[in-house]
Length: 324
Image (tube, rainbow, N blue to C red; front, side, top):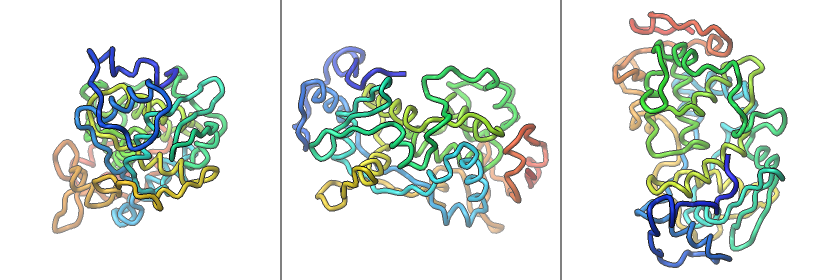
């Protein structure tokens, strides 16, 4: 997994030399390592952008909310879909600059509003609406019955999965595609969401198991935060989750009362966002779902066929209708 966000951030070594000092941060830092991390985070004109949270009304109007909800319920993350929060630039950078996960103690320390804070992983999970017990941690080995190639074939009809080339647009069932998009807009947030990583595919696999693994929010979230301090490209979209950590008990900090800069960009994964992402396209008969760049009209009555194996995917999709 990782040891600490301050170990080998890449600001002076793995990226081939220092990026140089940026202008002073809008918050007080206690040590040089934090300053290096901050300089690295804002290097190459990286920007903090709004986190996009699921828009329940839009998903309901498309007929997919119940299916997406059922998949998240299956791993104990049902309440996660009710999260919404604004993204603020300064608290996002302050958290990422100073956060330090302590794996053995299962706690994380970080600075918000100039003060050091500490939270147990269990508390972070609970306030996000994720389970706290019987969890699969990011550092755990892949379960023996998780075969990424077999599962990928089941949900795409493609013979082989590749982390470098497999596209989320190949996933046939719209609810699974939308679950992936929710994940890449939040806990796996990144600017390029076309490809699907093995960890993201694993989440989909967990969601389609009966009594399957329940991923630990905290370990995956803090790994993502750490990765943001070691990669020198791509904007930062994770701030909405940081706002939730700061604003909910036990911290209950009212970030909206401070003159912080609000991040740019849309904060809802709604119908307009799905159109921009080319997941759906309007037509005279209603929204059409895009599969491998081709529009199809899909009538979805139930997600039940996705929740347990085998997944009954067949050629009916390529005519007009997918019955699952």
